[in-house]
Amino acid sequence: MESAELSEAVTRATVATPSPSLLELPLDGARVSLRSFQESDITQTYINWLNDPLVVRYSNQRFRLHTVESSLQYLATFNESEHLFFAISDLASLEVVGTLTVYRNLHHGTADIGIMVGHSASWGRGFGSDAFCTVVQALERSGQIRKLTAGTLAENKAMVRIMERAGFELEGARRGQELLENRPVDLLYYARFCRA
Image (cartoon, rainbow, N blue to C red):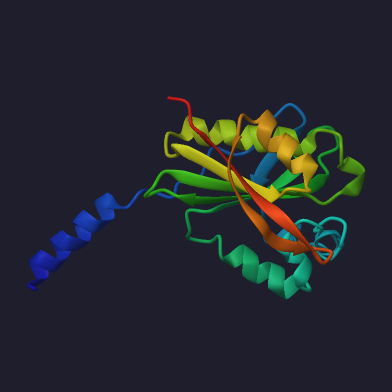
């Protein structure tokens, strides 16, 4: 291929690749604020959340031992990708209470959302639901996403409520897909299409 042809092919490929631009940050909900997760957020408190069996009970993170190094490696996977990693802060105290991830595929216009409220004193106070709904609204406004997805184990009733409050509907289930405390548990998949 000639140099001019190669240059033209690269230009066409670049034009066809969606921009992984970030959403306008911070994203403020009624109770929480979301901002990009930073290296400075990898504190001992954060590591303790990841290694707390109650916090990660329904997550496959429970099978790993988390360290500062493993957390830095995980954070690095978000650099120069179309995926997003947020710190969730309580708007009243500004304390970080959890994290939220968005795995986007801009080619297909899809985004899969995951959330962890690690600060146990914040459980049941609506922070998870507010963070989830806030990012759903921002993704819809971005015009980049046509379908939103999320999933959880059937026994994670709090996450099921969060997804349903955000307008997600059960799309499918894998029966007995994962083991929770040596019992087979269904893995539920929820989704919603973005409003035009």
